[in-house]
Image 1 (cartoon, chains in turn purple, orange):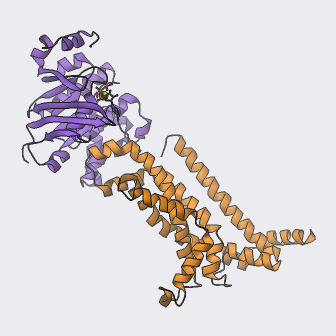
Image 2 (cartoon, rainbow over the protein chains, first blue to last red):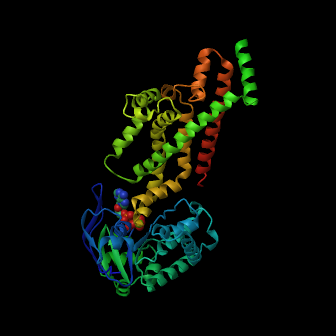
Image 3 (cartoon, rainbow over the protein chains, first blue to last red):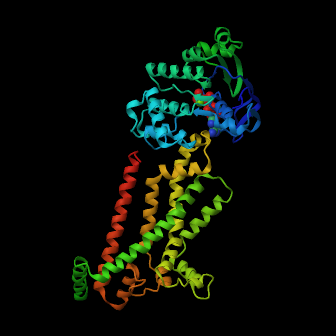
Length: 237
Length: 234
Ligand SMILES: Nc1ncnc2c1ncn2[C@@H]1O[C@H](COP(=O)(O)OP(=O)(O)OP(=O)(O)O)[C@@H](O)[C@H]1O
Ligand SMILES: [Mg+2]
């Protein structure tokens, strides 16, 4: 296994039907830490994560991993803002990524049960995933993304519909994943969560990186007036 | 009128006494159509999935061709198969004309476009649901197709049943290539055509009842399947 980092993004941009969703973005991500992407609705958080993950078409610039692209793709996972449920049971949803890589059925099922327990879906194993609640879907998506122990995990507002307790559980899972060496890049609207988890913050505005810095300095004294206003909960122009 | 009543009562008698001819013809019909259905599904379902997941340039063309083929009159399909299989045709050496195999070939050609097209419709919807996740998980094309075929199996069953309904009730093509030979290639629809032509309504009606019963059964199953699908289960 070669090193994936640093991830170097140069002038990368996603355009769709003439509209720029995000970019041009210049960014360098190091191997350690949790990067938190914040910004108002429509700022381009989702678009940026998709761009980094490689599932959005890059219209300009480039996103370069330190290892080769195929390997980089295999070692990433993504939790979508609206989780995608396979029309299968919870257990089969969790086992699915393992089955893709050729893990035998029995091992995959056992692993699925372990992860169902971890994300708090231990007693929903045989339920159809499409019948889960919004919060349960997010938990399932998280387990399914972590089950292959990815080296990089992108999470797009993974706690948006979770109650306080579930959020704490999920944050604990994320923290232990990060400690185990998974690089997290996530977006959130919950500034409390951003403060609790982030080691680095990227503040997006109008599709561009407007402000950026290590978490402690960013939260205490953001460089830009807009970031300051956003953190205060004011309207950002 | 009395003809008809006589025929009707005789038809019921044949049905309930399991008349040998009736049973034989019905079983042959089922054998031919089910074989054609299995072969057609093996071709059409993966084709539907392939069309759903790939954005290749000829997709539009393939879909247009499928739609055109769906509108093709079965008797024309029969004619083409006849020419292919006749002694002087390219596949003449196999001596398949006027055999159940020829009928199966014709039915496969008739229902592949139908099944593929319905399968494609259903799987395209599923694919738009799954697209981001499966791309993100770095799946191969084969894995995507397999996932769609498995998770969409209920809709695919509906597609296959529609194919069955079309094939079992088809008469033009199999009449041409099968020849409606007694004890050899005579099936429900060709027998009905023959008996009606002869004015022997009893057997024709009895065969007709069997055919109607099958059509109703298939439609009930399709209805039930789409019903359960709407309830968000799979
Ligand atoms: N497929 C698309 N076609 C056209 N415009 C799009 C598309 N997807 C997103 N956009 C636009 O791009 C901009 C950025 O969207 P994006 O989803 O990245 O925002 P976001 O920061 O994730 O917002 P939110 O906080 O609401 O999730 C928005 O203005 C959005 O309307
Ligand atoms: Mg978003």
